[in-house]
Length: 184
Image 1 (cartoon, rainbow, N blue to C red):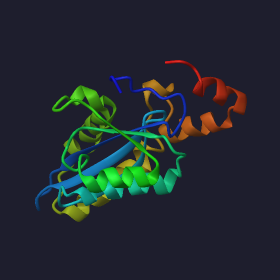
Image 2: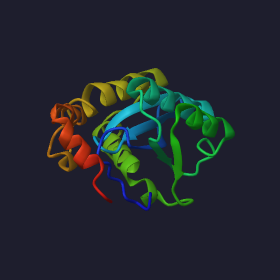
Image 3: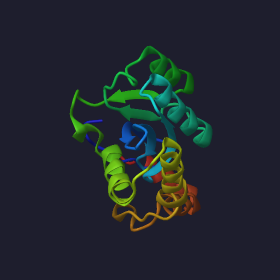
């Protein structure tokens, strides 16, 4: 991706990554798939492990929710979950194109890292979770009840991801075609 994290339309470029949520019962791991165009979290999964199934569930949710056409780029780091044979097979089955950043370089996935910074500042730094179940509920509420629907982004003209997508879909089709074929 050459650190060019922009997309002229929804479901052209997705970025993905994993973070951890501390609880008194141990870590809860969160895998997300984010649509770069709207900053919307289109797929996510949580588990008490870091096995490949975690990222498979997140991409499955994204594909189920968005029903993307073939050729959507799925960008991630080079973590073992994303370089696994099972994950590569799932991308091919869904018609997604895999892309990976340089090894150990967080700037190659800055959009996903930015979401995790928001999650940390606006949820995790303010709450302690006694159980993984409590953390699951709070993360679910943050993503689906706040971040996607109400959290405003300066990059989106201070709209939430959901509002930005509604505005995008309300544009005339000619505008979509012109923007999506724009060079660069």
